[in-house]
Image (cartoon, rainbow, N blue to C red; front, side):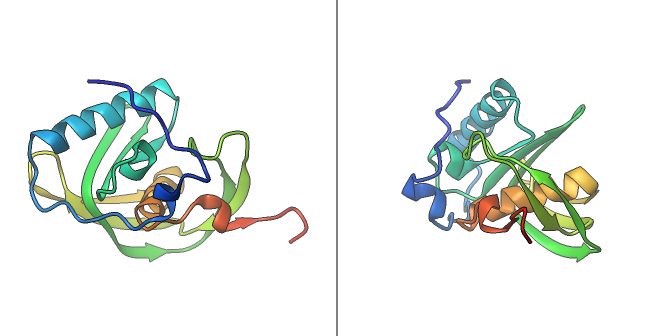
Length: 149
């Protein structure tokens, strides 16, 4: 495992749409391991592959003791609304209020190739949305609410 460099705002890779993973192989396994190590080292809640320079649809999220590793994640249900402060490892030093769904359901593939579904509320719902946005080239600052709004 290795800690990878986190790409910062202004890096063009952060604005590109990531490609679906067609095969879960050793390279994807290593990517997941490196992303977890990088996220933990940076004290992040989540990390998407483009943030470490890889245009693949892969995310990791850790909230408390729960570690989620998802390949080709897709939000299939959302409900409600919440507005709270967000930050991002790729946009250091900036935090903004962002409105997100209160609850989401996400489907994807785990690191072993098994189809999985997660339902999350509050912070987990926010993290799923934030990381899936990264896979579509969207940063939280694109959705942030300024103080004057």
